[in-house]
Image (tube, rainbow, N blue to C red; front, side, top):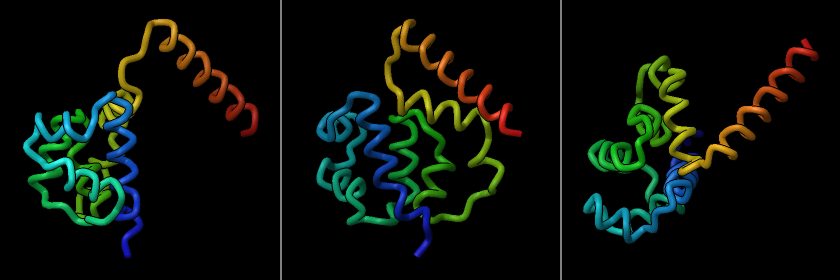
Length: 120
């Protein structure tokens, strides 16, 4: 089984929760049933259609290519690991961030990077 298929459900759940959305809200906004969304998030449905993935990518503001890859569809490697796509995914997962939280995140990332440079 493709590793990506194990990651899709938890990823979708993390992003949805990061945006502060309920399954019913996503259903109302995308016409994808909350039962289907729940089955996706829990891994009961492992390979949703590209159409569903596209709909969710638009609503969650994440990379369609990343969702396709996580669902096990072939995609060009470079598009999934594209830095802007990763940044958009991170922003969606974090949801609304206050200016103070943003500053704390930047400080924390700087600290991590400084430690990593010290190890090399």
